[in-house]
Amino acid sequence: QVQLVESGGGLVQAGGSLRLSCAASGSTFGISAIGWYRQAPGKQREFVAAININSGASLQYADSVKGRFTISRDSARNTVYLQMNSLKPEDTANYYCNAGQELRGTYYPGYSDDRWGQGTQVTVSS
Image (tube, rainbow, N blue to C red; front, side):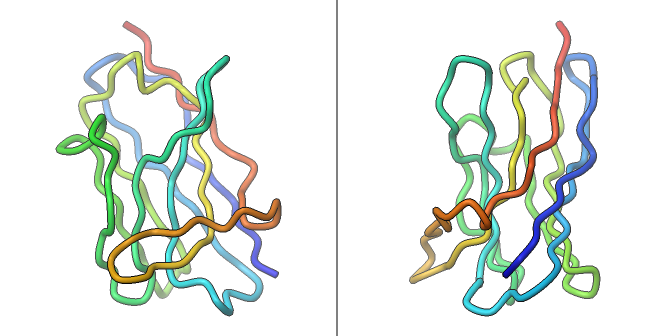
């Protein structure tokens, strides 16, 4: 069973930057990719970005974050990062990482509860 712990959230002004971390521990058997999702109050959870944890290749970005967010990984630390630049108030949400799989360049999330971290809050003030 994998455990995911997010960190790095906080309060930042519009135009600022934050770097989120997703540290994985436990068994990563069957997991080939990590994705970031976010959920704002009153809205559904939405996909942000995903990366193949073996090759380090980014897989997908949501259109709303392309050119502003960058996903990366440090395999030695079993950690995936989400560098967020040029933040906007609409980026305010709780950010979660998810353990999933990559197949032919597409990210497939893990749906069971144990494939999600607890989240880290990002608040962007205008």
